Length: 219
Image (cartoon, rainbow, N blue to C red; front, side, top):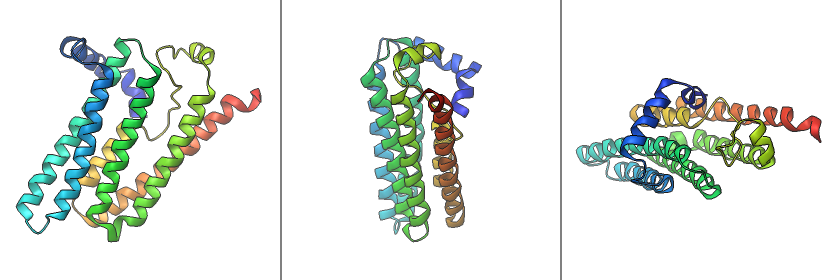
């Protein structure tokens, strides 16, 4: 939802301007995606490490802060790779790699958060992960069902896959993961994780309804 609004805002123009000046022709969209993937996985590993060395509270806190910073930078890389891809000719592999990277980072960080407090976060974590599976499944099914000619009619020529929007997109997911990390209070993390799971399930059903409107009468 936020992603869709940002694409039509002045913020998106500012990001494109920054990328055009400092990143364009210096790094490819796929290289930026790979950077975001490596940083995101590294962040998850550091979150787990911070929980392992929790007996040393200072070291644990330092590792944890570094992990959060790296996660934020990873999200920034994801924003920039989209801008880079729009400036150049998009590729099928690039679109696949972007989706693979985004979900890998999100799932890795979510697993790392569960690792911090498995006793309390196991069940909301399981529901959160299952909601992601359902949501990305319906997303890919819709994307795969929309052919190239339909993309052109929908004015989505620069995309390799139709993007079915919904309540929970990349930015909302990042916000939830960020607050799950920074609020070091068990009950807050539990509530945030349950709310996240419910909202992602709602998004999956939103996309299913979108599929109904797109394809039901054409069958």
